[in-house]
Image (cartoon, rainbow, N blue to C red; front, side, top):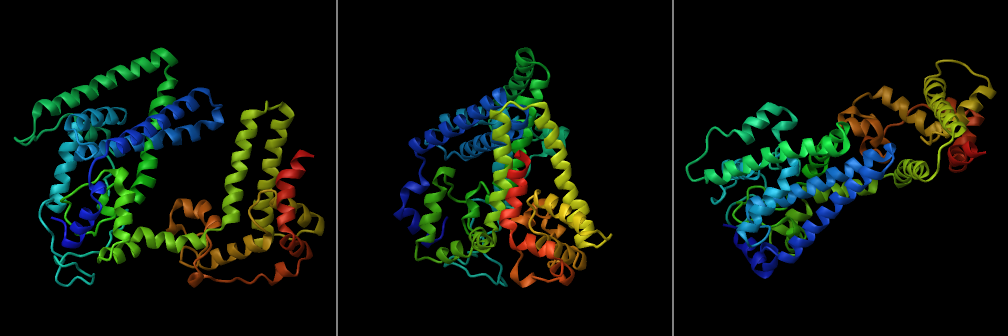
Length: 441
């Protein structure tokens, strides 16, 4: 059972632990509308817009999974029949038989937490405890208490055996419902693939089905796992999973905990999720984020709304190569590493070319790159690969370095170069001019 303080919060806000038909229908309508919009975009968008349409399709499938997850817990709506029906339909596009998911998911909960039994915090626990002796720390949202990655992403055959051919079915499980759910999934699979091929051709299977599923796994494992789909991300880590709430009630639940006078208030305030938001938000480089987001968006809008001509296409390729050369041969080899000597005309051309790539000024870029080589893959490395692929690739341009790990490099040679000084002082004019104005002249 929940602790006394948690029970009082539930009692004061009863609507947060109760299924609500209106909220459930709104959630379902929004998910289906998002899915329909993604299919329209896939049908009518030009080829270069497909990744965005696939990402939207993946997000909509993730929303369907959230609904199916709530249905598996029986807390999406008050009707068990509707929960099972909607759960079956929500999981069909995901190639996940609903009853198989319920079987394994609920038993996973029992194995992890012994759902109905309170879990006492270890005696040597350094974390604060409630009156039941339970730890009230908030778990890391990407730790073991999130939904596991489905095995079909790692091993297709294991997924088939796990979900479509269960070998051990407990006696208390309704086997008719289980195998009917599996049969429904097989029937859907046998129908949907030939239907797509017949209506739109073989490649349409990749466009309308396979890629949205891949995007779903990326969205779910990359975003949903971070924010977590389970209420345990907002509950104290060792709290019993004795009561479950629907996902559309999470905001009410978190607000009630955060505004309470119980021990959970501090836990929410100091939770991993909140503390990370508090830590990272001030470090976002908003100008760089805007530039790196705005440029691809306007290019896609232009491609979609304007008929591309051969001269424009050729000039785009040439200018892409030119600005790339400004970074590789200019910023990197010439200014950062001094790999070769160049006269002022070459330095000026390389400065202008690199400016068009909108990767910052020469002083900023080269200073950080020299620090990178001095402190490679350490906390002081601005491109630290230990931060993950996306951080090393582009995240370092969006997030300001941690002040405690800030390091400087010797850039006296750059400060002595009048071309470098000029670009740095007037970069907000030089960069946009070379990126947006000069290519259109």
